[in-house]
Length: 416
Image (cartoon, rainbow, N blue to C red; front, side):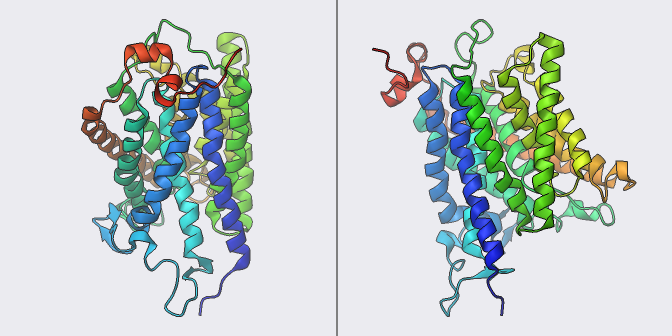
């Protein structure tokens, strides 16, 4: 009979708590990057996501992600474990275990991934979206995009080691340690699609939308970095050497990404900024997420440095192509997520091209990244169009007044 592993259980409870902390951390990060008349709305988009996804995950999110009955390898049967039926207790009253871990602990851990993924998207929509429409989008998108991709990658579906991409090359299967496709490509593509459909903030390209509170931004980055150890090291599902490797790789890649971003700023602008350092932190964390268990610490330096450079350059593309990704979700999460996912094909110590593993891993990683891009893009487009009758945007007049007052009847700073 399987017995509970108390060490693993404790580690996973701590990891789940760390990942949960990331969403309030993201609220500070995005809130600080916003203008002072919209900081509360920006933070509320993260906290509202917590509320909606936390309920949905228990009802059908876990089942759609990890049910044993798969619908075409795309999503699990939402009714198989609806309301966590059969996932908590056995008939004798003992807890249901999986390799010594109570399944209910894993439910908590995975729920926090769903929450932070949806919250990431909100940064592209700052200062112009109705809060009620955002909450409706959260419910639909987590159901139609996040849960299916989680099933495809981690639940034994099409993009997993049991799917068709695992059979293309002998001994080479898709690698996504903690969510390059499921989390960052998914959210980044959704952010791009919504930014294109909803349109620009008033004054985009003419007004300087400066962060109103850079200490908030840096505090948010610090909380995200701290929480990310649960995200990556927790994905080892044990307090062991793999968790240690993921921890070190996460730290090393992030440090390198800071330097990469600041180098670009110094060469391009003549100054290295605190916003750049904070953004570099997030770029490095994003890039190492899918690769944390498959690259070496030295490889993570290269991976993180390139992520910092690519993202620092990519955040300016919105001005060139005219899409208003307000807080750089596309430039950071999509770009660094794509790089981190594909870079495994070069840097994986067992199967990577630079380690003599051939081209197979690179091909597989590129294909799963492309599938994630197309899937997330199509699903997000359909949902965005379905919600158009609700109205996505506040009025021009309300946008000028400030979304905090209009949507929440509050202000962050009352100056007497």
